[in-house]
Length: 360
Image (cartoon, rainbow, N blue to C red):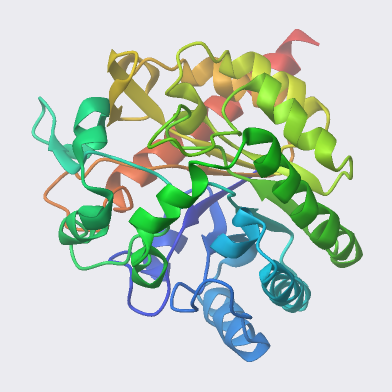
């Protein structure tokens, strides 16, 4: 297992590489080139420069999160072949800087949704929160502006302005698309890119839908064990895998996260994991919480033990953190709470390892 943190380059992050390198247990970062418009090729020289900068800070770069997929691919439009070819070139370029895992998602139009990016919790910290009825009442044509106004001046992955100009029209487009059509578009993409991922020794790891339930009539497919099995069956390559995000999948209280982890990780289908906790107010309303189990509804000990028991040897990062100790940062991506979460997870992993050794 390698513990990493997500980091955004180009001055788009309040957290520095030096601070990350000083965080115990962290070996590297998951990063991206957020200024490259969706669908365009990631230039090799830009990637080389990025790798050199990260390595110079004493960190590894083996995970990219994310190379977003152009909406035309998800829609299955004739123009998708051009964007898939660009994606393949980007995969080849990533392999030249020794990237081992590529996290991406296939969520239509909206990568993730929250009603508040800085909801005040009882202890005075703030966190991202989700209130289902509030989200449904948001005007899709104005949602991007609402989100960006709460972003503290940082970019929001999945809410890139060039993607969202046509949000309302894109949502309308999907009203006539069946789930079977959407699966077919996913398979078309996988069958095109996975052979190149295999040649490049680069694991593709799809992120679950966030939240994992219907929203605005959009197709939702990576939401539970049954749907994940369907997804993995679209292309049975060992390079077609899952970013298992406990916060996204855990929002649906019917999902048995330890069981899901044991099933898919033991199959070698989970090269990347996001671990975070959430506290439900109802089945469709929740706040993001501190990582420690008692602060949320997820048993992080059992989650970490399931990864350990399944022989997981991929990458883990603590996912979204709260804003604590007066920190001002990108929503969910401050240093302090994520550092606490990383060391909590790392401590659980060490304890489980030593418990197993002592029982032999």
